[in-house]
Image (cartoon, rainbow, N blue to C red):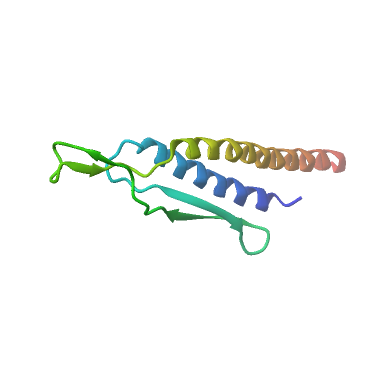
Length: 114
């Protein structure tokens, strides 16, 4: 059981949840460009998260205070963001449980030896 793999997965999933949270917090920010996260295998038995900027255009809406009368809204997809959080949370909890179980097993082994 490699706890290092689960630790790197926790870091990658934490990055994904933070990026998604930032996107959702800026859903009503004019001109905000969302980001996404690609989780992939790293060197050895590690997991890494690559943050990718989404430069697609957001919805154009009327805005009297804007220079030309219209302004671009954020390009955040709320439904996509919320649905990405569900499996990320489950994966985070699963990796956390792997670490907890590994530590319990090591503790039991030490108690048996001592």
